[in-house]
Length: 399
Image (cartoon, rainbow, N blue to C red):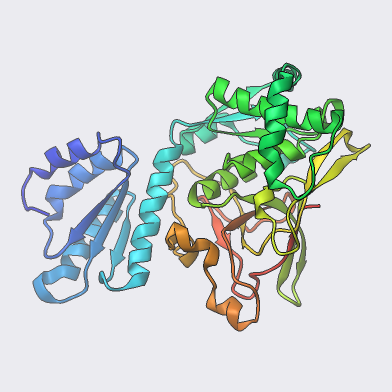
C-alpha cells in the first residue's frame, strides 16, 4: 500500500474489470489510510468485494497499520471484511476464501433474470417477492409469464423430441418410464420449461404449480426434478425464498440441490425430517436404491395428476433459509464452514468428525429446507445456517 495519491488511478482501473469479483489488500506495515480511503470508497461503488488482511507480528507495525485502515473504512461506511491471521492458519484462509466466493456469487447474480410461471402458489405469503426489492438488493430482474405460454409450448412439442427425452431421462431411473399420456404430459412440460428458459433468456425460475397448472394439465414434479438434476435453480409454488436459496446453493455445489419441506423436528433425538411431494433430483438417490416413479395428484392438490420421483436421498448437509428484513446495503457473506470452503472434488466424501463420533454417516453436498411456517429470525443479510453439530443426519424421503 504505497503512501501516495496514485492508488486512485489503480483502483479506478480495477473497478472497471468485469472479471474481478473482489480485491484483497494485504497490510504488511503502517498504512497511510488517508491516501487509500477515497480511492476505496470509489472502488466500493462498483459493488465488488473488498477484503483487508493483516498478518500477525510486531515487526513493521503490521497490526497498527491494518487496524487503522480497518477503522477508517468502518467510519466512512465502506463495506469490507477484515481478516487478522497468518497464511498458515486454515481458519483465516477459510474466511478469505468464503468472502471471495460470496463476492463472486454476488457478481454472478447481478444483472441476471429470474423467470416466473404463474402467480403465488397455495397462499404462501412468506414466499412472495417485490421485483423492485430484488433489483435493488440483488440486481436480479423478475420476469413473469402466464402459464398459458407454458401449456402452448408443451402441447407443441414434436413426438420425436418426446422420444429423445425419454431416452435421455431413462438412465436416471431403475424402472422404465411409464407409458401413456400421464408421463408424456410430464415430459412435455419439462421440455417446454427448457425451451422457454432459452427463449426468454432466464437464468433461473419459479413456477406456481398449483392451483392451476397441476389441475389443468400435469403436476410439475417430474419437470422440476429433472431441471434441478441439470443444476438449474428453481422452486415450486412461486416461493422466491426457496428460489434464491436453491440458486445460490446450486452455484456452490457440484451436486444438485433438493429443496423439501421441514416436516418434523425431533428435539429429543436432534433429528429433522425433510419430505417432498415428488420433486427431487433423481441422481441424489442413496443406499435405499435408485430413483423410481410414482404417480402424483390428489383432488385438492393437482387433480390432473402426473409423474413424480420416488426415492430416499443419500445423507446430505441440510440448510434452512431466512430472508427477513433484507436491506439494500446488506453485506453478502457465506458461513466459514468446511463444507463451503472444501475443494469441490472432495465434498461428496467429506466426513465430519462430529458425525463420525456419533456413529452417523458422512455428509454430502447441500439440501435446502423450505418451510412456510418455521424460519429463524434473521435480519439484514442473506442467510444460510448450518444445522447444529448434533443435528446433522436424517433420511430425506421424496415419495
